[in-house]
Image (cartoon, rainbow, N blue to C red; front, side, top):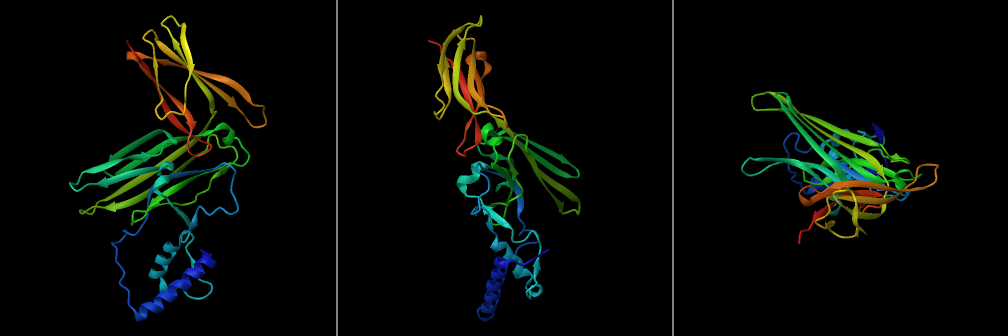
Amino acid sequence: MKAMNKKWAAALALLLGAAILAAVCPLSLAQTDDGADRSELAGVFVRLQPNGWEEDDDFFEFDEQALLDYMKDHMSDLSGDETTLPDELGQSVHVVRDEERNLCMLWEDSVDEDGLRSTGVLCGPIFSDVSQHISVTDDGESVEVSANVYIDMETAYGDEALLTICPVYRRPDGLLCAAPDGGLMGILDGYSVSYETKAERTDEAGNQATKRLLFKVSVKAKPLPGRVTLVEMSADNQPLASREIDLTREELVETVSPEAAWALVEQSVTEKMPDEDPVNRLVREAVSLDDGEGEITLYLPSEVPGLLAPRALSIVTVHP
């Protein structure tokens, strides 16, 4: 419990004014089924601030509507200057815009008109190694979703960078809202966080079942490649040709000659560890061309500075 702050006091004054007006012009409020007005955990939202927290940061705004809804249901209990409210009420939130869904990993669970259930993970390009596991027993259902997020090494080992992995809740009106939940300043490599929710359900026969939903995100640091070179290799491991790859293309597809048995991908990277001088080195990875095709994952800059997005580089043998 905590004392009401100025924003809550202003909201209470607004609500009291509305109550007086309602006495003259009665309002009809829609009623919801028990539990239908609760927000449910839907996923996670990743936010990176490379320069750290800023004083005028207003990303998370005060959730005035949640406070007003609470007050409408507890009007008789709210009076006087020392009114206190639950800690979780009126907290700051961020309504996730459509263009921000690429920063979210969401669990979708819906039933269509024919009663067919559809489930799965929806996530943006910054998420890698996404996995899901569903377990159904007589006691209920458990869903676990996990993924990795890669951050460039310079940002990860910086002095100010702030990474926040926020839980995302789906409101009854369908809005997705991210709520602040911690964060980590400074060295971010190896940072991981989990969010979990459990809900008890009772079927028509009176049997209880538990539905559990768990999200886990791990953050890993990777050096950002400066240039990437493709070397075509023969069956006796001799280089046939080499070229630098244009990483700005929408689709990363490289063709090689029929004589190429495999390919060598070289990434020029600079590694900067805390309190150490930068080290330049080549990272080499062999790509097998079984049936004339091969693929490798490159971690390249995303639209969010500091976060890397996995990109598939496809290598295809072209026959004359």
